[in-house]
Each structure stands twice: as C-alpha cells, then as structure tokens.
Image (cartoon, rainbow, N blue to C red; front, side, top):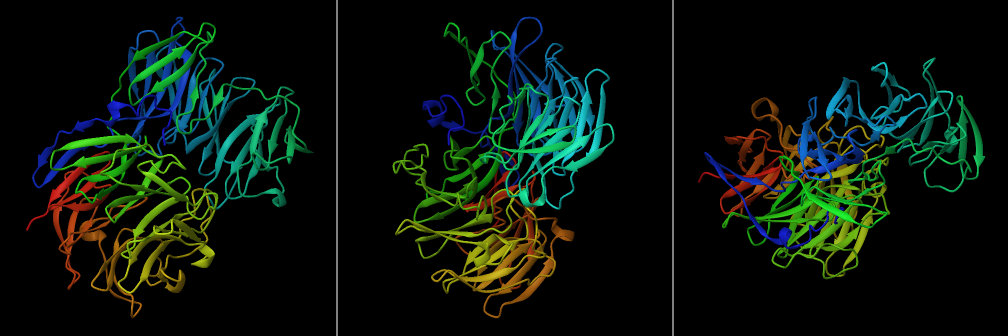
Length: 637
C-alpha cells in the first residue's frame, strides 16, 4: 500500500538497482534490501530566527537512531544522533509533542527527551521507563507522558528541569496501551487505556492517588479516550468511537453524560505518529504538503497564495528491517521490509535489485504453482505475486494488481499478525496462521482455496481455545501438523499455560488431536517434514523429532549450550531444505545441517553477521537476512 510517499511508483522505483557484494569466506553480503528510513514523527516549526524547519525522527532497523532537521528554503539538513542507546524498531516514538515553548518532546527506549529547535540540539534526556503512547502539556507547561506497557506516568517540568517517574498507575496482567492523556484545570491527570479491557484512570500528582473511573461493567475490548476541554474539565469515553457513553471528569470525580459533550477540546500541540502522521503547520501559516524519505523531497505550500516550494535533502541510513526471504520460482530472492514497507527482488545471477513500495508488512511468504504468496500484518491479509509479471501496486478489488489482493481476516480478529503461511502440496490450498487482533486472545486459521477463490476461517475455539498457531507443516496423508504459541494478540491477555502440537485434516478442517508434548514450552517456533516425521524447534532452543502416527516425541535436545538460539521473527523460516532433501537450520550465530537419520546437527559455519530472518535455498546457496542486509552462504558439497 502506498504510505504517503510521493512519486515512489514512478520509473525510478521500477528501475533495477545494483548492489555491492562483499565476499566474506563462504558468505556473501549482497547489500541493503531497502535503503530507506521511516519517519516516527514529522514536525513543522521554526528555529527561532525566522526560518521554517522540519524535524523528522528517523527509524531504520536499529530503531529511531536520529533526528533530522531540514531547512525549508535551502534543503540543508542536519542529523542529530539519538543521545541514548536504541536496540530495535520498538525503540521508537509512538507519540510526539511540540510544546507551547517550541520544544519537541517524546519518550522511547526508556528515555524522556527534549529537542530545542532554537538551539538545534538535544537539551535534555533522562532515563525512565517504557514508551510514551500519549503526551500532553498542562496549564503550567509541565509535559506528561503515559507509557506502554505497564501504564506508567512521567512528568517533566521544563522550568525546573525535573523529571518525575510516578511509576505504574494501573495494574493489569496484559500490556496496556495508554493512547491518550489529559490534565484538568486543577492538575488531575487522566489516562485512556486499551486494548483488552478499556479503562480511564485519574491520578492526583500531589498525593499519588490513582483512581479507576470506569466501572467493570463498562470495560470492554477497545481503547478509552480522554481530552481536555476549554471549560477546564476532561471528557472521556469508555470505548473511542462509540455513540454516547461519555463522562465529564474534574478533580478526580466522574459525572456520566451519555450524550456527546458540547465542550470544545483544547489542542495542546499534541499529535501522535502512526505510519507517518505529521504536524504540518508552520508558525507563519505555511504547511508541509510532502515530506518523502524515499525520494528525499520536501514540498511546502503557502495556502494564502497557493505557491509551493520543493527542496531536496538527504540523510544517513542503514535501511529497513527484512521481514522475510524466499526463493521465487525463477530463482530470484524475494521478500519484504518494515519500516518502511517495501518488497524486494534480488537476482543472484546478475547481482541486480528491484524495489517497490508494497502493501503493508509482509510477515510470511510461501510459493506454489510458480507464484509467491504473502501473508501480512495488519488484518491478516493474503496476496498473490507473479514475480515474472510487471509490478502493479496492490489495490483491493483490482484484479490487475500484481501482487493481487486475495482476502483478509478482518473484520474478524482471528489473525492480525501472521506467523506462518503454508502452501499445501495439493496445489490449491493456502493456510495462514498467526496471533489475533490487538487485545484479543486466541488466533485462528485462514484457508484460501485457489480454485474457487473462497476463504474459510477457523476460530481458536474450533482449534485450541486461547492458543494461536505459530508454525505449520503438511504431511503426505493430507494432514497438517501445527504448533501453537501461548502469546495473545498485541496488548492481549495470555491465558494458555503451555503450547501444543496438533493434527488437522485439511479436507474436513477438523482438529483430530492436540497435546503439550513438550512440557513448559511457550511456542513451537518452526516445523518441517522429513520422511514422514516432523522436525521442529520450540522456544528457539529445543530441537525435537515428532512421529505424527505414534503421536510422540522420538528425539529432543537443547540447542542453546552448543549453538545458541535459532532465529526468530514474525514468520521465522528456521528450517531451510534443498531440492536434494538436505535440511539446514538457521541460528542467530551460524548455519547448521541436520542429519535426517541420526538427527545429529553439525555447525557448518559461524555467520559474520547475526542472522535475523530466514531463509531459502537457491543454486547451492542459503539466503538469509541480517537486519537490513541480504546475505548468502555457499553450502559445502
């Protein structure tokens, strides 16, 4: 899906781009799959000297590693490294606030941070906890942050420079998303929480008292919302977007309104970044029309005259995280990245790349009948890509799209974040598996019949209640072995105690058996079929061999002491099989070979870079991802 990137569907993005391999013994570094960064907040402001500037938080596979400052008149740019360590893409802003004093604030990677555009510098950062999901400024100028995952509350006083962490203000056994926060005119703070069971919490900074505002009968799946109004009160709703169910809050007290309040909200320069949201308006009234990190173009317009100005800028990046890697039917190597969302296709024979902005996040990939299939986040969607055809951006309802949109789980919450896509050997069936929508527990299966082009969804209650399927493998007899995870949907409540293996009949779609064959396991990371047996890895460290006829474990060992952990991703692809039937296993630190008769594992080589995603076999080489880079390993004869 295009994500606000101006011109990316033009000829420049359809051009073939050449990589720069670097031979590292038996390993080859083929380069960065998507050499772009993603914005985690774009802010129009001024530098205090009459010049309009744009501030952009830059995120690549490392997390949010820098703040970019662009001069709107000249295109000159400065890049300010994040002044504290970041480790992953979760180390990124989910909310930003431009204060009344023209300071940019956010909280991520367990640090609260202030950037002063007038000084062109980070002027404060302090260690605290969590990630800010909601930010606001109170009447005295204090900045408040409500944090994920435990609903913490943090305050920063720009005058005294004091940072206070008030700790957790609401206890739950699931990850809480406090998307919004507001402060009334007497200083009480109100936080709206989602997703498993909505809640609004009132907090008194003077006494440390925290009070839940919603009765249990009104707490439902979804996100509560709050806003500060001109009359000094805070107004909130038990589930955002519903009709009615409004409350007025003041001094820690709640008054139920029912109808939509008439009081107008005060916009405290607050905005939340989600997939590139912008604060577009400059102090002089001009506005950002486009800020494109792919083509490195900034367009600013003057709404009074209609005139626009375009400047080019640049920035440094290590590229987007590779989510998945697969060998296409034509022996090119394909996959997807996040963030931003790009599809790539690499030809090992010519060392050439193709890169395209793609439809959302490609978690899982599979191939069947000379096509590549994609299962993705969000909404558990399914795409069909003919890699030999021309790229036509995916559009629902457009059969000429390539990749073509097939179906999705939403609005059914059964799958939101796919973890496996099985292209069944029958040549017509695709099975998508994964965890459910935000705040839900228990993931289902999506069956797609390519002949009839129809979808069937099995709910978790038709499989194993409160489990989600992490891994799938087909058996020769028309059965499928699945491995579950106890993980709920993002922000959901874990209810299962240990993961199960199960047997499912593809034709009848009926569950035939399930059991916790490995006590204490929380996920079956990946599975593969070998001579009627199932080889698998659980919790990234427990290698096992399962007999699906006898329904018992034949062999098990702990991999971690000798090899470390296997790779893990939203669609892991731990096992790689060659056309000759050789079985390889991808560890974070190297590549092993599995003997199908003795079950012995031999380490073939240590990788020069951490292996972060698998993995497929092409012409004697195993291709895999290391963060943003595509690597391959020449398998010894």
